[in-house]
Image (cartoon, rainbow, N blue to C red; front, side, top):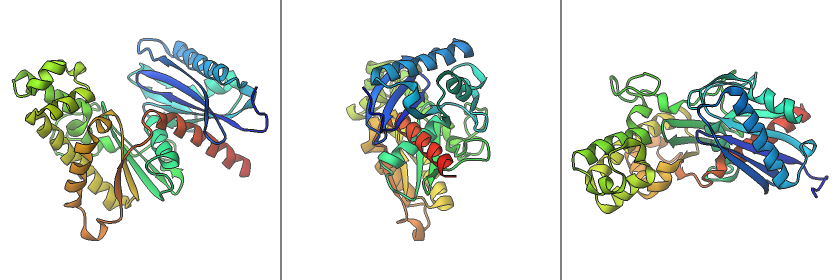
Length: 330
């Protein structure tokens, strides 16, 4: 049985491939969890029903009733309408204008805090991980695109009714390659995992990366972070050059952020960084250092994310706790 003297919180990570809900106590000890795979071809109503079912399963696993939960935080992909607690667009799920917060609140009765999935992850690293206790934390997460987020003096850095810190769409190469939004030369277009995989597939096809060819072939969908790291470790020089070229552009983003915000910590996360932390972080650090104003070179540090997949659910739950308690104290 649950302890009625405690508060309980739920963190939910609505990722590109999974739905994960975790129930936490007030000290953020996990008590129960549930997950399902997302389905890109299911409609909005079916998707919302699946989300609610995952929450029910997590509550059952934790042996907690919905009436005992003080709040839920959910990290969502895509641009959001924060006032309506809705997803404006989630292309990977095929969703448009999804009232995700209202759906959960109507089903369970507890308040819902909606956040961008990268923002939730960065908040998790600020509260519990690589950026714990810092005044200002910026997160950069290379993946299919490149996500960004910022926590400033304990609060997510947000627009008036939208998320911001779209680091992946900062232009770094005029007239460069086209990114997923149709823009030329963004950070995403030259330094995402998808871009690295594309260049690596071409190198493997040309015979310049025999270890990658043996491990993953030339299909870009099979060239994941682990395969890229394996190729570098085994001595595919061209793959290492491709990764280092991406690091050059990631370093440019660090320079931009430091000159604009002077954060205490810039956290790099995601599967690509996890697979090649020892290669990528030192390269980014060295190349950024050479471009930053001498007076600002010691104001920040680079760090690898510590929480892995737990960052999103822990951050989302912590955001819910913060939101509920701020309203109670208003």
